[in-house]
Image 1 (tube, helix red, strand yellow):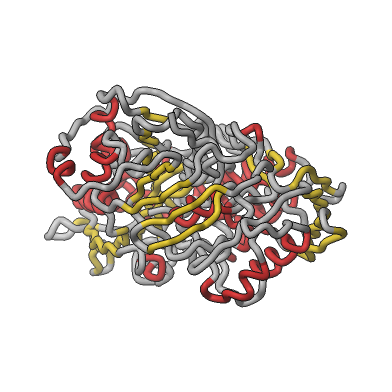
Image 2: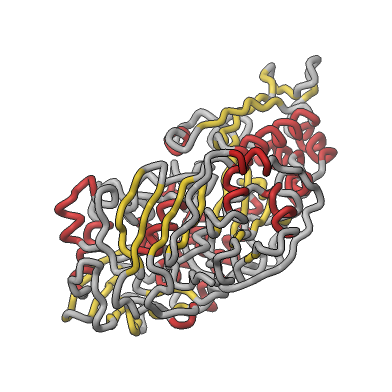
Length: 542
């Protein structure tokens, strides 16, 4: 249920009190086949899903980002509050007055896991591969409109744009910008990130058993991380094992037992029990932005009418979802993205996103609908029946049922179809549904706006099919802005504009919750994209 990009955060520990508690089958879980307790010097991280591959240019899966953050580096990274750009592989950089040329001065002494020196030519090769026309590569918009990327010498990269990109440095912290070994990528072809990955990160890829585990070993000599994030290197631990534990109750039981040292994919219903366990630590990032929403496909019959979109938005109860589905561990919201992110205008009108079923009836009547004998609104003989696509995962299934129930109460029929992760991304590119469920992370208003609302992103991730010249004009102005003031002005106006169009029903804002077991020191969770363990440099055993 995630669209996303990646980043970093800082230590936070705060007790949470869910408003609704559900007992979990801990005894049954403990009786299940146990995992081995992690060996000395090894940290085991639990998660429920694996990635399709570990290639920063071909995967948008959170599971891929989690591992890639540990085995690779980006040129720059972000501070724990996600507002300050910090050096990572680049020691420093210069930006021309016209905003078209970025010159990166690389750190000396950086090596790949196989010992090969990392140079400017590897940056050039990485970007050439990612931006190769017609290649099956994702999220290339993050790179801006690139004119050329060249190596002035072994430690100097000249990155030239055709038009300025005001968010470029923020985007470069994303995992899609992880530097690769271009020679290895060329040699492995389609198997790159599947059978091998030679990176510069603090850990090296040792082995991968799909749907079972990924094993990473310490990168000897690594010392070029960002000290502002807690540890510049080397890693404190010798090995990290990413273990797939698909059963929620089993995952919950493995953490106090020390079989899994930490996870953030534990179910929400287990948090209260973890709070009562003095051996377990609950950690949250200093800053993290993730919003869940129900998207509206504006190209579909009925949904092309803003009054119908707003009527649907008023019918969905986000407070009830936050309470019942997230157990009070998420905040209901009426905004597409958090109001404290960079370039969010305080005067954004979010009144269209309040829960107000009476307003739903007013809007449908205004749009020419009448209530049919079967209790379903209709217009011109056509009942207001909509199709919804969701993920075949526990929380997503619950969200679909909640939306279906809310709409039924106001006379809107909803057919809910759920698909597993191997199928849904293709289904979401189709023109066969009206509503869909998604969550996504971001670091700024510009980041969120660029991800979803540009017409160039149709049919995915602009699944709303929002093809609007004014949106594109304001997007281009914000992206090409030279000064922070001009960037903010454009993105603030665009934020107001897309909210007024009622393209989503925002539901909740969520902060990752990391559960750390008795073997692990308190560490610094990351805030961007949900990849909370970040590079792994702050993982330390007691």
